[in-house]
Length: 68
Image 1 (tube, rainbow, N blue to C red):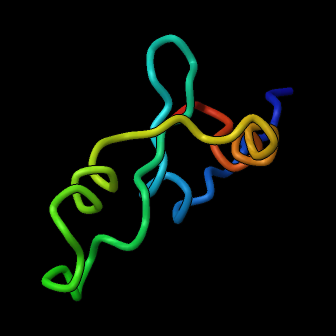
Image 2 (cartoon, helix red, strand yellow):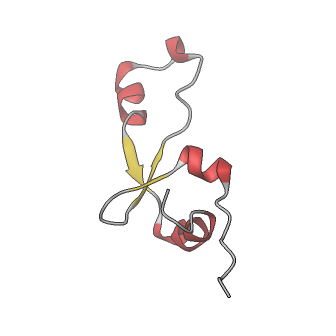
Protein backbone atom coordinates (compact mmCIF):
# COMPACT_ATOMS: atom_id res chain seq x y z
CA UNK A 1 0.00 0.00 0.00
CA UNK A 2 1.29 3.47 -0.89
CA UNK A 3 2.51 5.78 1.83
CA UNK A 4 0.45 8.92 2.52
CA UNK A 5 1.81 12.09 0.92
CA UNK A 6 3.04 14.84 3.20
CA UNK A 7 1.44 18.28 2.99
CA UNK A 8 3.54 21.34 2.25
CA UNK A 9 2.95 24.34 4.49
CA UNK A 10 1.71 26.83 1.90
CA UNK A 11 2.68 29.96 3.84
CA UNK A 12 6.27 28.68 4.11
CA UNK A 13 6.33 27.74 0.41
CA UNK A 14 5.46 31.33 -0.53
CA UNK A 15 8.21 32.80 1.64
CA UNK A 16 11.09 30.33 1.34
CA UNK A 17 12.97 28.68 -1.52
CA UNK A 18 15.28 25.66 -1.46
CA UNK A 19 18.27 25.98 -3.80
CA UNK A 20 19.70 23.18 -5.91
CA UNK A 21 22.45 22.61 -3.34
CA UNK A 22 19.84 22.35 -0.57
CA UNK A 23 20.19 25.75 1.12
CA UNK A 24 16.97 27.37 2.36
CA UNK A 25 16.79 31.00 1.26
CA UNK A 26 14.59 33.81 2.60
CA UNK A 27 14.11 37.55 2.17
CA UNK A 28 14.69 40.10 4.91
CA UNK A 29 11.80 42.05 6.43
CA UNK A 30 11.28 45.80 6.92
CA UNK A 31 11.33 46.71 3.22
CA UNK A 32 7.61 46.91 2.37
CA UNK A 33 6.56 50.46 3.18
CA UNK A 34 7.73 53.70 4.84
CA UNK A 35 10.83 53.51 2.64
CA UNK A 36 11.35 57.27 2.45
CA UNK A 37 12.52 57.25 6.07
CA UNK A 38 15.18 54.62 5.42
CA UNK A 39 18.48 55.50 3.79
CA UNK A 40 19.73 53.85 0.60
CA UNK A 41 22.38 51.76 2.38
CA UNK A 42 19.80 50.28 4.74
CA UNK A 43 17.41 49.49 1.89
CA UNK A 44 20.21 47.88 -0.13
CA UNK A 45 21.16 45.66 2.81
CA UNK A 46 17.54 44.50 3.08
CA UNK A 47 17.35 43.43 -0.58
CA UNK A 48 18.43 40.08 -1.99
CA UNK A 49 18.19 36.55 -0.62
CA UNK A 50 19.76 35.28 2.57
CA UNK A 51 20.29 31.80 3.93
CA UNK A 52 18.00 30.77 6.78
CA UNK A 53 19.66 30.43 10.18
CA UNK A 54 20.89 26.91 10.94
CA UNK A 55 18.74 26.79 14.12
CA UNK A 56 15.53 27.10 12.05
CA UNK A 57 16.51 24.67 9.27
CA UNK A 58 14.97 21.57 10.90
CA UNK A 59 11.54 23.22 11.34
CA UNK A 60 11.58 24.55 7.77
CA UNK A 61 12.46 21.13 6.33
CA UNK A 62 9.31 19.77 7.99
CA UNK A 63 7.22 22.57 6.47
CA UNK A 64 8.74 21.98 3.01
CA UNK A 65 9.02 18.19 2.75
CA UNK A 66 9.55 18.25 -1.02
CA UNK A 67 11.90 21.24 -1.12
CA UNK A 68 9.53 23.73 -2.79
